[in-house]
Image (cartoon, rainbow, N blue to C red):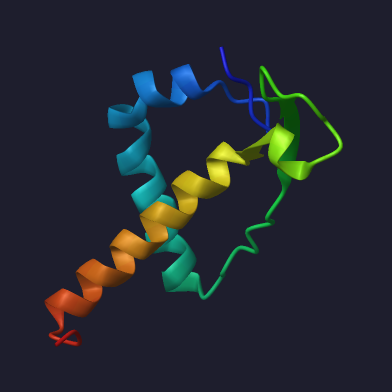
Amino acid sequence: MALKLNRILNEALKAYRILIAPQLINIVKAYFIVGYYPRLKKSIIIVVLYKEDKVDYLFLGSYRLITLENTFNKILEKVIVDYIVDMAKKYILLL
């Protein structure tokens, strides 16, 4: 189970995405209607892992970096981008 920064399990988000997505779309639409634009904070945790079978761990290439980004922000960003693209297509703003 992967727990992200805001303590929402990835598995829960994936399992309930069909239920969550329409609600997020409604929230984003409401944001645009009232003129509120949330600040999506970029919070990232970097986990450093040793690569196996390395002779010298003084070199950066001897490590693997894993980044964990806030799950909810990733979802909200995707919903906002999809909404903007849909509106641009609807009003023929994209070439």
